[in-house]
Amino acid sequence: MINRFLIPMVAFVLLAVVLAIGIKHSPEKGIIASPLIGKPAPQFSLPSLQDRTHTVSSAALRGRWYLLNVWGSWCGTCRDEHQMLLDVRRSGRVRLIGLDWRDDDSQALGYLQQLGDPYEFVAADHDGRIAIDWGVYAAPESFLVNPQGIVVYKCMGELTPAIWEKEILPRLAQAAGS
Image (cartoon, rainbow, N blue to C red; front, side, top):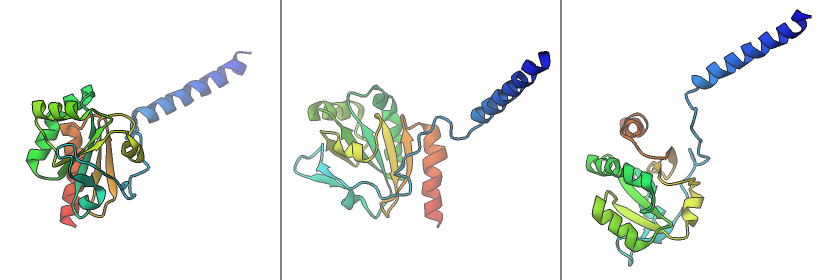
């Protein structure tokens, strides 16, 4: 009678242990892969936040690497990330383009005036349609796009020094070496 319950119980425990070890050591745990990776970046043409007489378009960005950073003045994590974005801009390694998502222009401009403007250009996505095209879940998110207009990396959440060093710089260095 004991064997009838003991064998399935031991098998269940062993299976649970194997699954737990696999999940714990998975290199991609907590990562939501973007369907855009390896595909052309969504096309857009939006008004410039800094100069309403100009537009920011994906067509004008082709030919050079760029990091598109989706943010909003209403986003607390964007504020936490801001110093890192200033460091990225100072590094000169990649163009930093902002996508101001569902924001009030005067609040967004005040935010950049107060904290510093790390962006080469900021596109104002007032209705959020372009962020939807990019598959944005929540701000901040950043997308690394190569000169051919292909999305090669997506960072969900705050861009940190560790992500910059481990994920973005190697991709830029690899491209420079090829």
